[in-house]
Image (cartoon, rainbow, N blue to C red):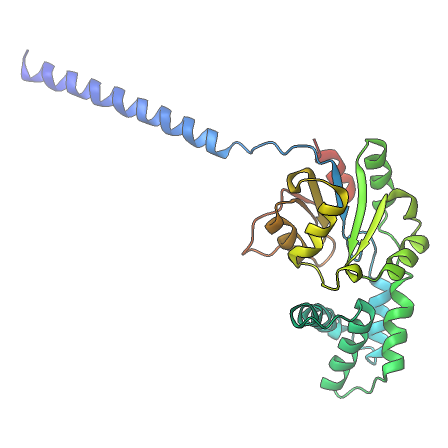
Length: 260
């Protein structure tokens, strides 16, 4: 064999080897990128506030109590969530309405706005039970129920609070059970809240889908092993330092279409 023929043969062998490696790489890459199909959930758990119900009336009443300072609403909401976690970690439970009123007074005091305890209570407690459902909620729940899904709710609101909320919004008949963290005396996203619901319903985590508009809620559910769905309501965003939800949708109608 001449040197030229030897070199040609070597190039051909190298070319074949490279082509084989490329084919294998593409195959592995393709397989790695194929999403694992999610099993159809037996139970769908819905968060309530901002997931199913619009918070506009609550924001309006809180803004009015803060002398029209609607720019303070995100601070009030984050303060309320912050101190719900403080209650959980310190084993000193107060219901969500009480914490919301206390957070409103704290924000007001920090901004030099005078808000009495009674004014704060009225702004929160008398409004949070009168929130309308988003337009996509009733049709979406109707479809899910017709498809045979078991639908329940899990909320940081009190038992009496969520009962009044569902009655006002016309959602009561869609839900087989309503769970409130009031019974556990700890707030979501503590693992015990989700585990409690699983125990009550007698289902495994992978058989359950948690639906919420809050990344912190889904982070807690995902840590317990639940499937998760993020409904991206106006102003809500995902937390980039936790696992991405299994479903990311704009509304409940989109979720209905994507479920297996």
